[in-house]
Image (cartoon, rainbow, N blue to C red; front, side):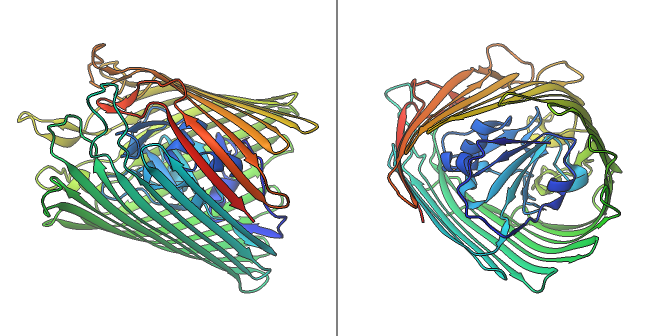
Length: 597
């Protein structure tokens, strides 16, 4: 069951679309999936953080605007959220995370947010949920260009371009994005500003598809990213530092369809590298890099119109260089079996099993089972239970002098039950969930005061997610509204204390109004306080904040779209931070031009 936020589309009528993440499409009926379409992605061009912070249940901790951005999904840690690129897990092999400020949503046709356990589908780290980035191949006559240029406060400039061209046999997509900012916004203390906060990044994507015959498709996807960030100072006396990182994702895929059978063979190569300069006045730096090779075979069989079976074989070899002196590698093989069965027009269930084999750790048998019951035309009930896990990262295992090679994987048992209602233009969903996590890996200080990774606490999480969507069209007037509310009680089971940097409440609300060529949008974000110490000291918190953004745009095109717009961010000039000592900008402005032809 999916919810589509702001699903206004401006695409050409196409003959055929093929997707790479078939598991998301066919085995997610019993869990909550938010699908973010073109208009939502376009309204939040700056980064994936901005897009998901305002349009999903995920909470983000940012070390300042444009700096490192870490998610918390359903009260879990940043390492427990998977990022899936065209069906391939792309979380870092070094630290287990994805920095959401290094990805632009404009590089993808669609973005889906799948809440809850997904390790049977996606492997390690899909405990809190998964974010799926998709470049869907389009076969049929199509040709479109999209240019987005923006200039904003603090000498911030952005440029994005996307080209799509297709024929009956050939599909291609190119995209380019570049962002630069002095990022020197003032702090609440007028004597200090966000010093040494400048950044720049460049991303390039190219995707090709070729129809070999009526039943065979060959596809190639590639993404290249390069960025440099100067880490903002907390105090003017701090030493100035900077961080350079680059990564590449390459994927070759062959899809074959034969009657009731469909097979997908994928070969992927992922690389990442970083350099950290502890003092920008010096050429000395520390570094890390990794390389991942993945081979994946996915075979599905439609037993009949109601039953689908899907087997997945996967082999991955990881190479990691944690420091100049430490090189490690590991091999991971896995097998999964999935089934979905539609018992009737009203009732469907799905189930899956997965087992990994590796020489670095003992992997548990994973499972998932869920059901969807359309009780009436306007009311649906769903339920899911799953066992999920996260493997230790290279940094956890091998960090120079501190890594712990005896770490066990984190494991999680979770259950959820959801309801969806449709009432006179309203779509409402309410999902409640419970999660038990064992052997959580945390870096904690030892007797010598030095931090090192340990399997520590049990964590219990209880939460509720509520989503509301409404739209109405009257002649030339279109009105749309969305509200998302998340509650997370994420506690250390031994102490009863809330995990640090996990808010109890998060609310996002957005509204849009359009009349002929004019459009107006407003979106609001409320984030509750978070504790920054494990003892939940009331004096050691990052306070709650309310942030409102608004925008006005005019489309002066006739057949094509030529849109000029302005955004006011942090309209009410809120002084706020999402991490202690890392203030975010007060009121600031953005003007942009979008051309579609």
